[in-house]
Image (cartoon, rainbow, N blue to C red; front, side, top):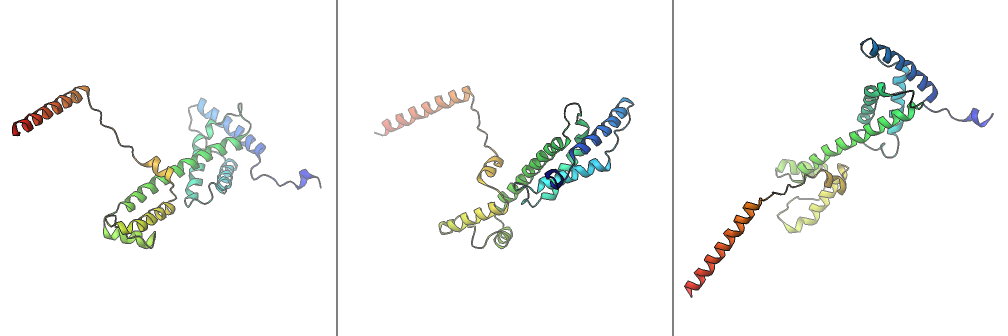
Amino acid sequence: MSKKEIKKEHYVNNKEFFVAMVEWKVLVNQANQQDDPRPPIGEYIGDCFVKIAEHLSYRPNFVNYPFREEMIGDGIENCLMYAHNFNPEKSKNPFSYFTQIIYYAFLRRIEKEKKQNYIKYKLLENADDDQIRSFCKENYFETSKLKKSEPEHNKEEKQATEQLKEHFRLNEQDIKKFTPKKKKKKVSKKKAKSKTNLDSILQDEQSEDMSNKR
């Protein structure tokens, strides 16, 4: 056997995928010319979308996310939404084209889930209700008392915070990204000037009072 014969076939045949996309695009163009609804994609093309999404989800940077199924669903949905944008005249590589669509769908899902996790993290971190505190203790950490007013528990509190971050798969960069930035209040020049004048008047009055007392 030659090396070509024993070489493992790729899970998506790019040439067959391209032919299927060309045939479907012909139907799409005909529908557009006649103002008809866009034809649904064929079973083969849909199967390619599923295979690409599933295989991409097994990459090391995606495989450990607990919402991997949602990522796959988003990727397939995006392929269905934007399949008509594929232009056979510009690209003969639909595998790469749709892999990129799915890849960015995965990133958007991760961003969305991290934002939700950040909200849960902050709610639990700042919880004052005893029941929520008890829930935190039972489900996310063992030693923390979460009593911020007592200095002796600072170590346990820090440990609890780190365990919460780990549970919600958040790092310092994520927390910094999702933490709302405080808006700086702009003080108009007139207000600043009047404030300065008022301060100087009060200082003058205070000095005068002190001299009178003497």
